[in-house]
Structures are given as C-alpha cells and as structure tokens.
Length: 144
View 1 (cartoon, rainbow, N blue to C red):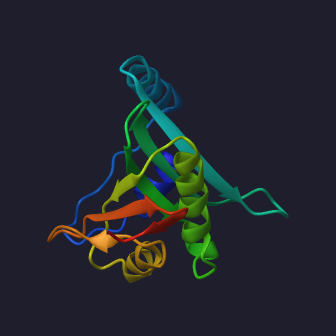
View 2 (view 1 turned 45 degrees about the horizontal axis):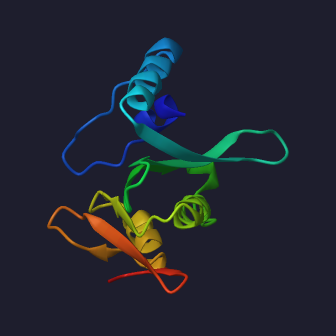
C-alpha cells in the first residue's frame, strides 16, 4: 500500500515519498509499536478483483485524545466515488469509540478532492500549509 501511495503522491513542492520493502515496512511498524504508537488502518478493495482502491491510517498513543491522520490515498481508477471519505470516516468512528476527540491531518493545497473530503468530515484549516483538525463533539466529528 505504501508503495502504491508513493507512486501517486500529491505534492505542490515536488516532494516524493520513498518506496519500502516488506521488511522495511515490518521494521517500521515493529519500532513504532514498541514505542507505544498504535495504528488504525482502513483498506478499501474492489469487490470483483480485490484490487486496492483506497486506504488511510492514523497514528495514536493509547490514553491520548488526539491522533494523526497518515497518507489517505485513493487509486486513480477509483477516484470520484468518495472512498477517501469512507476510509477516513471508518477510522474516525474507531477512534471515537476509543475516546479520541481530535484528528490532525495534512493536505497538499493542490489536492482539491481531499480538501473537499476534509471539509465534509468537519476538518478546518488550522495552518497555512493546509493542516486540518476535526473535533468529536456530541457524537459528531465537526470543526471546532
């Protein structure tokens, strides 16, 4: 999944994301787990052929009320069907059940579809680089 995202990383400054071997990915998750960081990942696959359509992940520490959104992605062939909204909502609901109240995310300013997704989910612009946060209040994720 991380390598698929790296091929199609939205960027306004020409930044790229490195690709990772299975071993490097396993090592990363082992090290973060040992540090107390947890991940919740949602994967969306196409029903007919199980092709990877979308994914997103959040990182968090147990006992915290804030989590960090990591690398939401939708494959080019599946864009325009609100799969990023679906994946991010699934993670937000999981976090809400665990007592989390805030999710931070980042957004490339040229990625208007993800900006729209974040707004639909109640994220609001907090920084000049497109840093959004959503607040869980009264059973709903909203902007503060």
